[in-house]
Length: 323
Image (tube, rainbow, N blue to C red):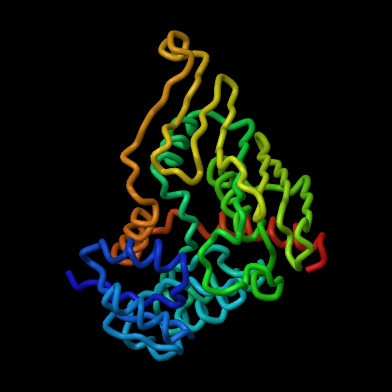
């Protein structure tokens, strides 16, 4: 089988720590080209991961690759992804797909017109502990999804400060971390969410929100989130349903799924169950899924409909705060 020629546009922390190592492990992928505006970073990436070509202009690699990973600052996602989709290339784009509902719609229309895959990197969908939690609760209708995610943004090894700029990031902790929580709730409920409450603060006095509380309502329940870019919140995901609950960690892949069901004899005897998984890297699972979708022509697990639902929520939140 001919290997997939992959380009990576944007070689910052998430690319070098997650995306590139994941694709490098796949035997049917060649790391063909890397792009970044910083030549010193390109030299390091080429030396470490053995890309056969590097460039400072993403347009230079279009003829070299079959697919690209876009992991650049948020405000550049649309332009870069649109270029490659127009060139007939498949695109895996780091969340958020873009900063607006309208530009996201245009990207999907372009992908469909050119017959190529467009997938958003919601990596937590590919965490084995979270997938197990969903499998456990899937036969039941969730009533409430609780989730929190946060940490001091200064501890992230970023190579640029775009996350603190509204014009470059499109928002703060909600578009950076809250979007994972919104997507997770959509994935669990499987229906369109409605924003019922959003509270944001700018504790550090910057351009973007650094702490937020969000409540979404669904046809059969609700989701309640907290996210922060200044405080290390407990990264827990908990799903409650009529006869019990299940919870795990959003960040630690090896955290067991703790499970309680009133109808389970084992749960009655032990108080609760703890189920473990192999803990395979979620970015590796995501990369493998993307390649399979490209090779086999199958649908991406992160569907257009779900992404658009999430972007509609983001648009509504930021319209309320002056976008």
